[in-house]
Length: 338
Image (cartoon, rainbow, N blue to C red; front, top):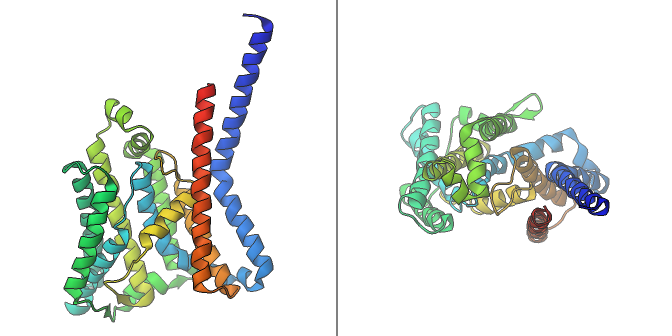
């Protein structure tokens, strides 16, 4: 091989390495830079935005979506999706409401029942997907979305349940110093999920499954078990978010959690998670949820109507998905060059 060809090959490899490094930096810090830029813009346009009280309000407002999004992250990492999280949240909180308010059960036992209900619904999603071999999680979770919502309406006679004890309200509206208890809970959950995804064999299996299902199965990954664990945890996180929501509004409604699935999916995609599976981080998802909360808060401070806010968030989601498409195409080109 001539010296010219050798230098040309080295140059190509250098360019590929440079692109990979830039891609890695963008994936890691892109959402964070977007959040910082958004905060700077809103701080200029709405001076009240940077007040400590408002920042803590944003942290509290984002907590529910953050918790739901952690569960959704797992499903999207496996190239799946869960459309039932909002309905699971509603059913779990209504069961908790009946246990605590109607049956005078201990609040902590009521919370446990709520979490078990959510986890069981998630388990059923996983079982429907793996054991009944439904073609896509879209089908199984769409079915659960209707079943859980219908059960919530049936057991409550379509009426909200209110009058929860202060111990429940503290979780959603209490604070330690200036920091909301709900956001402290989010921090602990994020730490737990980070350890789970990055320091355990099950977490590595989730990434492997999303990257290439067939290759993961051939390498010894128990695909069915992994998917069941993923959807069970997703249901559990929806129920935990429901506990926070009930604590904030002091009410469990069978119609609660509407569109929570869309918000959670949006937070994951804005945070850099790929719909193709195998790509996504806990930190990015947390930042994605914060971006949505900051955007809503800032638009409220600017006096933007709720209708326009829906349009703005929709445009942000389209932009995030488009970035994901470009990232996937760029990754394929780099692999082709290599």
